[in-house]
Length: 135
Image (cartoon, rainbow, N blue to C red; front, side, top):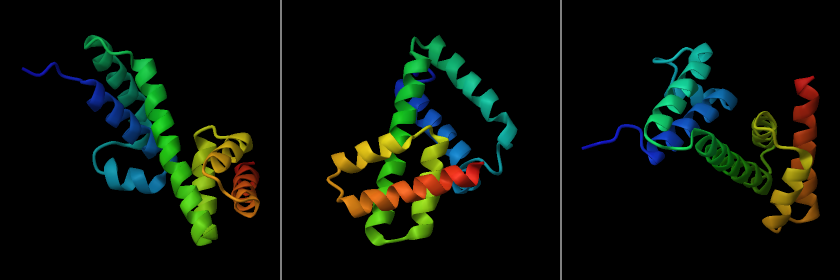
């Protein structure tokens, strides 16, 4: 017998929800036909309630999902830097900015991945540009 919302289902749904809020292509591919953008907050509330009913820590699941999504987009940013794809660098830097990533976190991520200083500089330039576009 299924308990309903499991840890795995909750985290995956949170991840999808987070991605849909920061990456327009994700929204188009996952929720476009079933969920208007303004109801994302309502969906989060429903997931929170379902998780709590099943004895899960919704806040901790949300934090873990956010961390996982950030990791995915860090990876995409560094791949774009490695390949020299400027538009992708800017796109992923913008998404990371939406996820609350600062330039210090980008530096930390790059150093942990053993990126050389020129690649770190490119990622930081993309992040700076994303900040300017946001204003």
